Image (tube, rainbow, N blue to C red):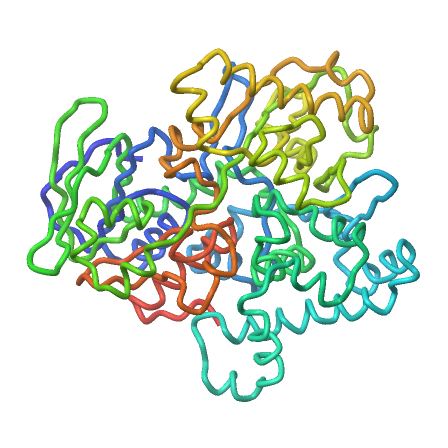
Length: 519
């Protein structure tokens, strides 16, 4: 990796501002195609939320990613990796297809399998009185997913015409939340909660979450949930290496302060080196913006964009999250049911109530949260010493609340983070692993302000624009801007998550190069 630009004023084909996953995918594809690529990143690590960090010189954690989908043969991630000759370098381990997500709540448990017929069997066993409703709901999930495939770019009009039934089915839910769909099919409350317990993947309750977003993720994981064999840092480093080996540059500690504009054409960007405090202007034929579009528009001047684009830029940010990164020693988590799966817990029957209480009332006395154990997902090692295992916990958190605490009451801020972790650990010891605390050898927590500081995400948002129906419509922001030679390429102009960011970067590459990768 090149740390400093050899020729900062040299014109390049593509200047990429930000090194999130979609930007690295785009940059690697363009570099592989023979284009000159330069990436500017304000952080000391590339990868955005995909970056990894090491604590105490022996424990390595990924900032946000926990499991991924769309990685099987012929799927988006696989297609991109093959194009980059990385499909043998970056491989994936599949989660347990008999139960990749384990949903847990009082009096109920459901392991989500890859096979839809088996999912139905399990739902009917739990809710025999609602068997027909559950069957209709599961059928609708897959009908909507089929329609969304034809509505996703690159849209092929002939395919839309051939599959009008599926497309019409999907369009009926354009403005629907997951709760709307639950209500339509009159699912029992407990069934709703079990099916929606993946909510930490969106950080929204069913009454606010776009049904489209939920369907895409739920069915995507059913087709295969995966974890990188050599952890996520191998993915980031491999993409950076493709750019560097083609003569490109990934420059760290370079904070973009302004964009260079001539008339209505973006010609480059100005950045300050955080370490040396030197300022350089970087020129390019085309500028790709991986930083938050609203933040970029503010730097450029929102008035310079068309009214249509200004309207699209008026999106709400997704909620933020609380993370606890923990290490245990002297215990094998597999003895307690953990393995190639994630676990989602709720102490409440109604997730709308549970999430509202945590997010708006800051009450974590009975939290709902996700549990992931990355050490158990691969035999590669490297994330911690051989006699240790990593376990992580994730739930929702309110940025405004935590920011106020950190700014005005630092002691209360630290106390609140500790309080949330202790509430989670109480449940872990009660329901999952007795005496869990006695095995803890390391723990560190992150809040919404941690996200903002290390990942440069406004308001600590975890997923760019909030995944509500309002932000998931057909008029959603995409890569196009009203300025020449300037394109967006991030979660808010595409979609958040590992596979969707691969798709976002590859789609922009395909449109600018004409080289077809995606179906």
